[in-house]
Length: 155
Image (tube, rainbow, N blue to C red):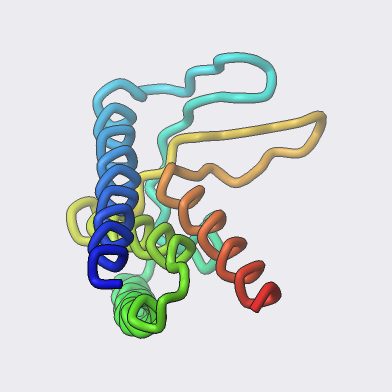
């Protein structure tokens, strides 16, 4: 049992490290290369945006005090989710969803302190609809939440 826990923990650490690093590297590339909008095809473009809200630009604000309160709330949620994941891990349950959410959320919080907002740069559009600009961390968060949701339904 102890060996299984160690190997599972190692898998979680690798997932967290890989997703976190992938997000950090792609954001640095976006910051260094994305001076103006770059369209790859009619559906996908790179468009650098500093997001002072949450995923998808929801709750975006120019107010520094609201931005700091939102950041503090996000940090509290990260702490609670981390504690929840730790507890589930010791119960022998899968925490892949939690790991994805935490790695994405922590990377986005780092952006908030370093850049004054989250670096978003991936922009999908289809027909007349334009999806909110996002980043790899946002993908991890959304995918992680979906995994958590389906895990709880399965349980």
